[in-house]
Length: 308
Image (cartoon, rainbow, N blue to C red):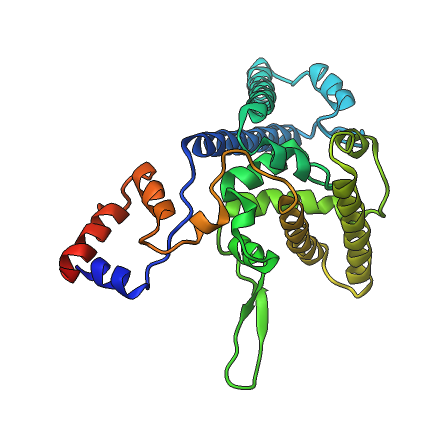
């Protein structure tokens, strides 16, 4: 009955309901993220084991071909230690193969996805490869459902907290509210803006498909974010704070690109933001699974009964 009263007064707002294929892609991106976490944990255990036995790698970068060749030649002092070492190496190799397999599956399923044009367009940005673009769209859905870039930033938890009273205004650190998976992927992509703006081969390959308009947006975003990053570092800001600030502006650039790309078979903006008695919400309520034991259809029937 309380829901019926709220619906009649117009206090209920329609929510974005993802489609089945959207939830399937979201599950695929999350299992890839879990596999990446397992791989990092396995690599940490292997390095910790070698450090305990004072076996140190003198090369420059870990987990590169040179480092892997060095691992294949490591011999431990005792047979038992060699068994443990081989088991750790095998775990790292298994997680690496699993991660590569999941990333390939992710790329194979993207072309058949209804938001494939948006995923392709987002990859025009520097620091946004296929995995980051798919994670953002799978976790947040259609980016055009946000009326402004600031709303998208709020959804990602990349806006400063507010402690204000009267005329006094005080801002704190980022709220870190909203979708943690999308925010993590976005922050990882924002690390690419530490170096000066320039075109690299992976980015050039991704820019072959998008139209000239999206290429211009990508270059303007790269120049702005790289310049902003150098300015904040010169002011003495911590690298992590600078990266989060770049991630916030990168979210705005993604929103701008999503506005220029049509999505096939998507719900229109009027259907996403319509009142409860509209045809768009009725269709969304029929497709959605019941949350909390009640659907919008049952609320509408209660509204009719109370009005009668």
